[in-house]
Image 1 (cartoon, rainbow, N blue to C red):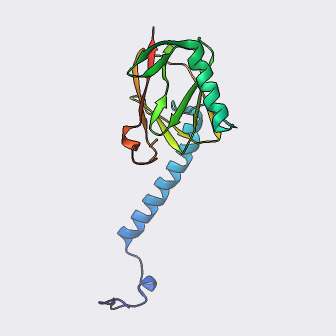
Image 2 (spheres, rainbow, N blue to C red):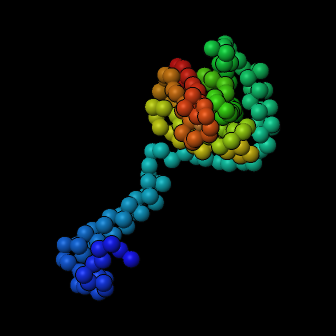
Image 3 (cartoon, protein in one colour):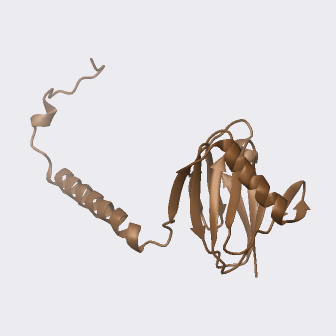
Length: 177
Ligand code: CUA
């Protein structure tokens, strides 16, 4: 029971005010517009990724990442290998507590198949400043076909809370001419 009950207990039987009805109609119509925009942007939007997902065991994914690091490391940067895989190849990036492993160096205007996975818990791959976001799960290989079109340094942040070091979980991708 409310402390101050309304004088009219059956408030829903009262006639609806015109202004309220107008707002209900506007909000409902706008909701419908936004619903169809989701479908429209799926085809016409510029941020739709060509995601594919496959099952993979975490240790298998880690092994593929290590094999790529072994074959294509060009230098190290504060303890991280900087890997420059050949243009057009499969590129592996592992999300783990608490970093993105390794640092990648990609060529501008070349296409890569970027594989993302985790070897422990769920992480969120968020590429900045372009704001590309992909959920990264252990046991799943998320493949995104990418063609970087601007040279520069891109930051990766983790945008899925994954533990005490979540805010420290950053990574880097270089795009070179
Ligand atoms: Cu990884 Cu938050």
